[in-house]
Length: 240
Image (cartoon, rainbow, N blue to C red; front, top):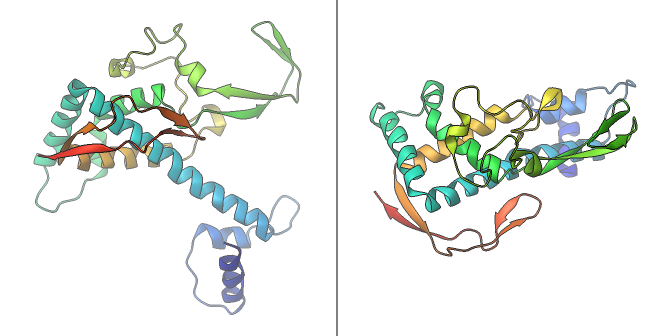
């Protein structure tokens, strides 16, 4: 990455026509003190974006495949919805944004997958004021960690929390800040809509072509740092 940055700086100095991308933006942007970011700062931010854009979404797709293999009745509902969309498309016609908006049941299924197996386990925040929570006094400036798993499995907000039930997301859905796979508030993940589109397009092309079954029925799920099957979730595909 540092070699790419060095070459981009050389090309910029030579006034070459360059792509308008985030790397060029970072090289030209000034921080709050009026200084350019260092190479290492840019590398850190670029790698963070690459990991954030790929790893959580791929983990979510794997979890979707896992649950659809385990729950045939859920697969059938997703398949029916996706085939209605597929039948409305002409030969070779790509999915549109309007098509994605029609996948309401599929997205409820994805939300339930994200509730039970959130790619983001949680995040650190800094207390802005002194406050008390559950009998503990948290002083201003203290680092705190919020947990997606603990929040989304709370029986106070989710009846029978370990049961797979997409209907939880009907109507107005769960109360605010109880379903937090993308975080919440002003620092909510900016890639939420990108991830939603990517996962739904993946589901569409998968279920209209295949059914599948897990090769290892009791495969363990490891967290490192996102949920991942211990053996990569081998499956047996059946073409439709």
